[in-house]
Image 1 (cartoon, rainbow, N blue to C red):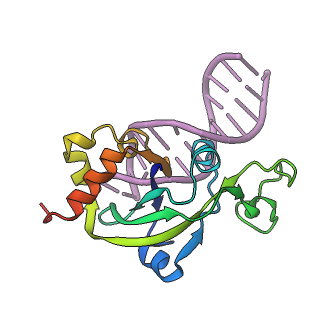
Image 2: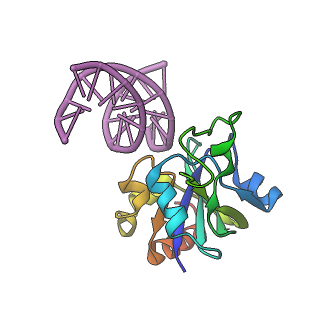
Length: 154
DNA sequence: GCCAACGTTGGC
DNA sequence: GCCAACGTTGGC
C-alpha cells in the first residue's frame, strides 16, 4: 500500500465536504506529474493525507483513501467544462483521475508551519515540490503526521 | 495583494 | 530546440 498527500482549497472543497459526500471523484487535475501518480501508482485502499491549501492555516486536516481504480477524467471530453481538453480523445485520453473516500478527521489540524519545523519531515514532497497537488508520502512521514495530530498543539 | 516557483505556450 | 512571455499555485 502506498501513501499520498492531496491538496484542496477548503473554500472550494473541504474535508467537511468530503465527509458529507463520503466519496468524491477527483477530476480536473491538469498537471502531468500529479496525473502520473493517479494513473500509474494510486490504487484503491492507498492512504491519503487530506491537506487544506490557501487556508488559515494551511494544514493536514484528515485522512482519506483512494476509493477507485484510475479512469479517464470525463471532464476532458466535455466542451462545457473548464477542464475540457480538445486534444484528448476517448481512444487516447490524456487525463486520468481516481476517487477519494473519506476516512476520518485528524484529532486536530497539523499546520504547514509545524511540518516545516519538524526535522524528520524535512524531506516531505509537500515541502520539496511546491504547487504539486498530489504528492507521495513516505510511510514514516505519514505516521509522524498522525502522531503530531494526537499530540497537543505546540 | 504580493511574489516565488515553475509549468506551458508559441515565436523563431 | 531554445527561451521569453505568460499563467497558475499557494505561502505569506
